[in-house]
Image 1 (cartoon, helix red, strand yellow):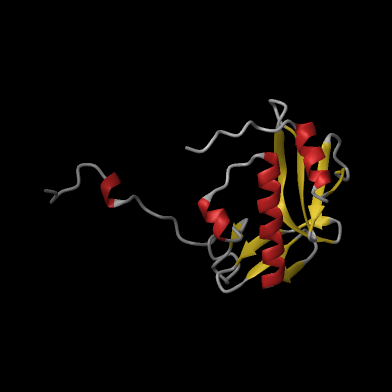
Image 2 (cartoon, rainbow, N blue to C red):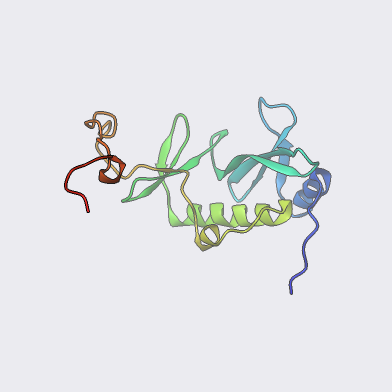
Length: 153
């Protein structure tokens, strides 16, 4: 039977990250939070409510000084920041996945099955027609939500 791991404190996690050659710097513009980076990827962590580590920005690749989110458009994945959007290549996806796995191991995050298979997108935008979801006609009640309908069994 596997042993239950004792969660690391925030200071222990920072020391462990530094010993594993992660770059640990104060997050730009945010007091009390730290940007952790390696392999061209980064995440923002901080002190959690119980003295542990809390994740404030999910891992993503660095594009300029911003951490990009992963956008899935059905036909292709993209990395997106507030200013840039770039097609996700296999090498970048592998780097992000490796970074996220190592970071989760150090800070004591739960390892989820779907995340261990590969990269999980932050946004899903399968419909290529912009605004199609906002101008759709209003949806009526589902058949099981109507009461007193004639002809029921």
